[in-house]
Every structure is written in C-alpha cells, then in structure tokens.
Length: 272
Image (cartoon, rainbow, N blue to C red; front, side, top):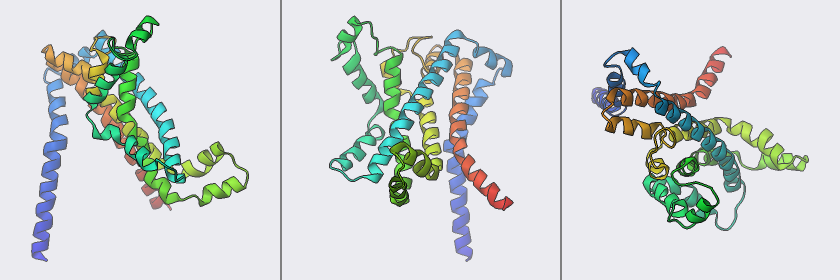
C-alpha cells in the first residue's frame, strides 16, 4: 500500500508539473508581457484601426465557419451513422483529412485553385471575384481546417443512439427535419455543443492556412493571429502580447464553455 501511494503521489506531481510547464506557463508569460508597462498602455494598443479590423475579421470568419460546419457536421454525422452505403469508409477518412495534413498545405491548395496563376483564378479575377488574398480565401481556408470537429463529436454518440427512435418517429409520419430536430439532436446536444465550441476555438486561432491564403494585408486580410505576427515582427511587443492575450482569452473561453453542460448536470443532481 505504501509503495502504491508513493507511485500515485509521484504520478500526481509529474502530471501537474507537465500541465504547469506546457499549459499554464505560456499563457502566464503572454499576459505578463502584455502588462509589463501597465494595463493602460496595453488597452491603448487595442485601439489601433488595424487591430480592430483584425478582431472583427476573426469574429466574422469564426461565425461563418461555425454556421457552415455545424450544418454540414450534423448532416454528415446523420449520414455516416444512420446508413450503410458504398464509400462510407472513404467518406470517414476524407472528413478527418484536415486533421492529418498541414494547414499550410491546405492554404497552398486554395492558392493553386484561386490564385492569379491558379486553375480558376484568372477567370474569377476577370469577373471581378477575388478569392485568394481576400476574405473569401480566408473563409475557405478556415472552413477546411475546422470541418471535422462537429462530425467527430457527433458520430460516436449518434452510433450509440441507434435507429429505433428515428424509425418509430418515421412510422408516426414525421419528416426528416422533424426527426432530426425533435428526436436525434436533443439526445446529442451536449456533443453538438462541444463540437461547435471546438470549431469556434480553432477558427479563431488558425494561422497556417489563413497565412498562406490571406496575403497578410493589414486592415483587410489580417486575422488576429496574423496581426499578432505582424506586430511582433515590427517590434511592437506590448501590442503583440496584448492581442495574443485577447485571442487566448477568447479561445479559452470557448473551450471552457464545453464544461457548462456537465456543471449544469451536477447542479441538478445535487438539487434532486
């Protein structure tokens, strides 16, 4: 028993040491660098027009990515879990493709397709449609890297649900959308909520794919991660770390919200 307790204690110490070094120290360093001259100068840097434009563009891209990938994720998860069809395994692999390749590669693909020398770039430019080095390119790059999260969180839970409830609703005369909204999603709302928040956090923090597809135009195509890099390369360290602190707070808030359903469940159990 004594040796078991010692091993448990050592494992506990090592686990917390790793968490402190890898997870807690980086945000603490970022915040300390942002506030090294005081909170007033730090907040003043956020009034920069290019910084404000980067914040709004990040929010815009995040909202669009979450909306599109939530709709796609729900429908894809329904298809993958409720039906068996030729090519199902290949579709599962393709859905997870963005997690297995570098985001920089995905950004280069969009340039290959929509850049000035790309397959469709010249035709689109002549039609007055700008994709590469413009907001649509940023949207496409972000949609690609955030595509798997809702699907990955919904598929395991929907597979556990089975099809009995949906088939019963279908026999009762319910349509597809009624079954999805009133039968399937209520039992999967926690997983859906988790996938939406993961998508939000990733969309706000994406750098590689967006960096390649955006062109780094200050005030126009710079999201918050890109603007942080521009500030840091321009030796504006306080402004860079302040923007990084804001971005980290936004992303961490989205991730922490995943625990809200669990907290609510525990609270209801205590009240019961």
